[in-house]
Length: 362
Image 1: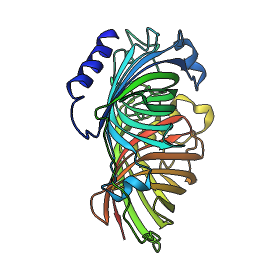
Image 2: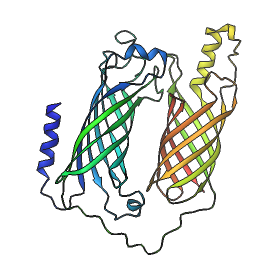
Image 3: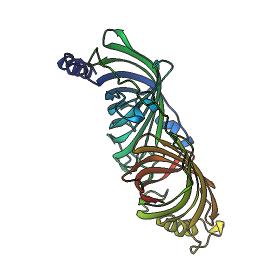
């Protein structure tokens, strides 16, 4: 840990002389607790997880319209090391991208980060059968933080303190995959690489209206996943959706739509269930297809947006999952009409699929 802090200071000092440098470096030490969300998670909680978070961000200067709209956020990259203090769970190493948003005279910082993680101790039926949280060595990592932030305690150096929530999951790309959630108290220091960084003044004389008529969207999402039975095999899925969206203002758009889920791993799960639990009287020919209806919200930043949806299965013959599902993810507009996205579909805290999508907006 001392070596990592030394690298942070060395990197900062090598660029401290640059003028109007828009970059900032932040290092944090974290300690907290695991949040078990199923009963079979409690045996994995043996201590208080510790973590180290290193971020490099670029400060927005007002040169783009979205900078001022979001109160001049930061964006950049992060490295997160987390030790769960649990032999079955081991340690995780994560890298990814992040945004820092600011409120209350820039003293309240909201952090949103998404990346990929490498775990040292994934599930193995022989050597690590207790770890039902991580079914693969590579997973998705999501972090959400809230902290008091003062970036000018002494010249270009600052401090921050708050809380960070971390989540690891492979989206049931492979079972087992109960995932892990933790909350960690966060204490750290930051260094702005320029003391004279300046933002451009807002010269817009007329405020632009962003309200739009209703638009219609077609989206196709796909990937592979495995049903909850370990070793049952990975199968492709095809999720096809159609929805209308209505942009309300600069930041928000509402969605209403329907979609069909063709998830082949569920078809295999039905066959398994009909044999393993004959008392349930489940036919192996039970329809695996599902149809959902959903409402959603899209937070528009620039070409990127954050998407959140809540849905209900209007048609679901095999209903071993809850009838309510949700989806969160990142969308990128390649053109005005064509977009791509990466989302995770879950049933409450239990992930079902990591979806890679492509869509068209009329």
